[in-house]
Image (tube, rainbow over all chains, first blue to last red):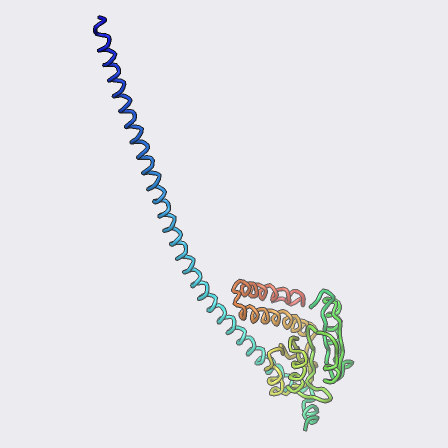
Amino acid sequence: MEDLSPLVTALVGLITGGALLQLSKTVHDFLRRRQFLSQHGQSFINKQYEEMVERLQSQVTMLRERTVQIDRSYQEEIKCLLRQTADLRVENATIKAELAHQRGTAPPAEGKEKTT
Amino acid sequence: MTSSGLRVLVLQSDPAGLGPAVDQALKELQARYEAVLTFASSLADAERAAGVFDVILLDLLLPNGLGAEVSTRVSARYPDTPIVILTRLTDPEAVKAAMALPTVWDYQPTDSVDCEQLLRSIAHALDFYRVELMFETCAATGKAATRLGALAALTENESTASSRCGWRQ
């Protein structure tokens, strides 16, 4: 029995050493995988972010162009309406003057004589 | 218009003989807008008149001026002030020529205008002229948002002007 104890001790040591070696490999593998995921995961997120930023910038540019187009169109429309309003004002005034003239409520000749 | 009230230049050859409707309108202006009326009876008086006015009630039959000549001179003297022609002159061509100026807003024959017509004309002159100026300024500076504001102001002022004059659309 005494002769077997060194053998048992050696066997236990061997098994323990093997288990430790396996554990070490597992830990190493875990760390390697974590590092890989960390690097490539960040890279993936960065890529997604950049694509999103590009898409948004493109949309902003498109919206700006559209705003300018609408603005020009709106500006032209307002100018046109202001012109039409001015024309209508003149027309309205002329009609009122004609009506007043026809009614004979005013002495237009008196005014004209002043300049001639 | 300022907080101290509406400043009106009444440039009429015969300020005392404008008739009851115009007299009433002027009284209403004083009552509703705390208007300060400055009377002038000739172009020389108008050109000498000190200060700034919000609106001018202009006669086209002045002792030393007639028709478009009057509006041109007054418009040159007060280039930023809207003008409402209030006159006994009824020559359509002369009125048309006078109305061609951008600051001349409306024409009212003195003998047939009524109080509300004149008040409405003045209110519109003030409101629309201001909006036109706003639009021109914004168009020059390219501020789209402010232009939208101008349009909103236009709509708002339309109703404001109408309500101020008791005018129902």
